[in-house]
Length: 363
Length: 127
Image 1: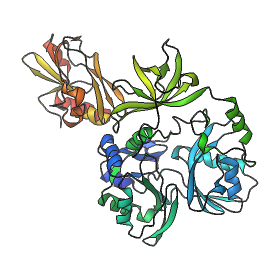
Image 2 (image 1 turned 90 degrees about the vertical axis):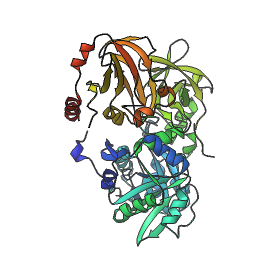
Image 3 (image 1 turned 45 degrees about the vertical axis):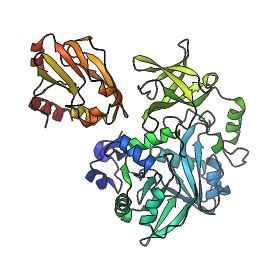
Image 4 (image 1 turned 60 degrees about the horizontal axis):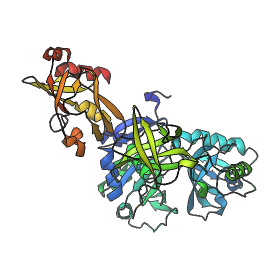
């Protein structure tokens, strides 16, 4: 564990301090967990727009003649099949099929890709790529510290973006553009981690503070990682370390649609094919808790006979749905929608029900 | 910084004494560290409680936390508004966000609590 004075700081760090944000150590970075209130920030994103400093996330520029092949070997999808200007969610799995990280890969050009791993897994992902591509001619340029990354999320986000960037072109979902702004180049992608419409913007550090202030002045609410976690849970988006780990595979995490098999270059094609054919023993499900107690990660889930049948991976009060929700791994035979289970929340046994995910879907 | 008509416990509860009745709540320091409170669980009226034992819990978006009583006695009133408006704790921890009223069984127990100045020092030493 790094000591406080060794924590990395984003370019926007002082802006967060000036805004009285509460800062906490997160994956080696000193990051804002909340500004005014997690609930208010969630509501802002669901109803208007919020901005998040996500500069701690990794940004790897991967280029060169064999860059496409290197990624085809390691990602759960073949990035060469993407169109230039397209991005896709995918998983990086270890040789047992366990999930090292989930990332988005963007195809910038035929031999140039941008990979966005989680902050906490960036080093691991870098080593995994290096370790498995020794013979290939390509280059990884880590641009994490010389760029910033801002997520602008919520129904008013595109209006706000257009106010700040008047010549903003239209971007489709999971597409991105490289756009010139104040003599710098920004990468603006129609992606996010909140279940709302919005964009994620990679920009040069030199303009990050001004750009953040402009978005704020046009009506975006500053939001911290606390709100981001609640919003992603409402949208039932997995968080690495909770729903997905090196001990879970993509199929039990219900991420089958992000795994392309029958690929000759994919290093663990056979491993994942085997796991898929063997079938699942456990599966991720959504639940709602009766009453207002909140289930937390690692709480046990029991059947009617008090046998342990699963474990909570994430839980929170949902401000949008006004109820207590969560995700859990449960033995497959207990995962039917509307099944009733019991969750041990500290000293209490609380009834809960398996429900459909996502908990929240924008209209 | 902390109201000087109140007494405080090391578990960050406050107590207001008036004619043998203690009104009990949690301090704004506790509320701030919990963040948005979404659920408050309190015992029923008539429950006997003992000084420094747990009597309920508050659940925030981030964490759950037990509440300890700073005094012994019988609970004669609970703040029922908290059932539908737990945010009263965030918005008004010393007034509308009070938790329970207790008929004290031993008012001398108050001597074991801190005044506002001592509590402020205690909070600063904890941070």
